[in-house]
Length: 198
Ligand SMILES: [Cu+2]
Image (cartoon, rainbow, N blue to C red; front, side):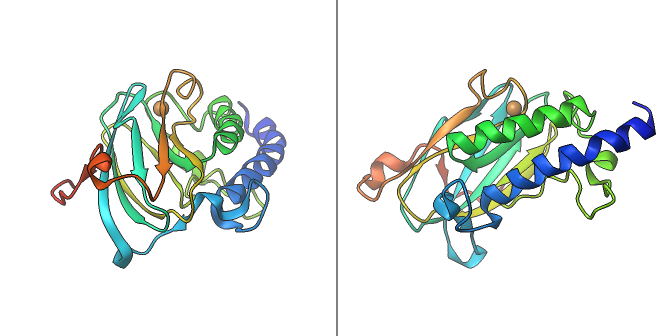
């Protein structure tokens, strides 16, 4: 795309991106149910570590159980050959985010197996960029390992999902079951005390 055309197209994209980013957790009490998904957690409050592995196109484990109020350290590793996202949200939030991700693909920010970081970080002239640094999500290239510390506040229907175009539809999402009645023995899937990775 030539540079002039690019500049003309970007403002509309920024509007769409910024509204989605705020819905994802920066604006407690905003649309999409406010902080229903929880909030960024403090390392000192982490009760356990859950390791999540990304493949093309699915996660391991496929579901995660947490307690209301629990703070989890997610250790996410991309073992696939494609860029993948780990995003905590409601199904509606993921659907909205997929439209943003589609724009990132259309504008060359997101390629199949890598991210154009220069373009993603580019200031669009109004202080905004297409940066993906929402606290509830990570966008990762093949081989990347990242962490999210997240505090789940209340029982609600959440999913962790990859909103790279086509991946959610291919099955790249999983349930986060927030339920204080779940017995500890039923929570072991995806659970790990290991601190050895990274
Ligand atoms: Cu993916």
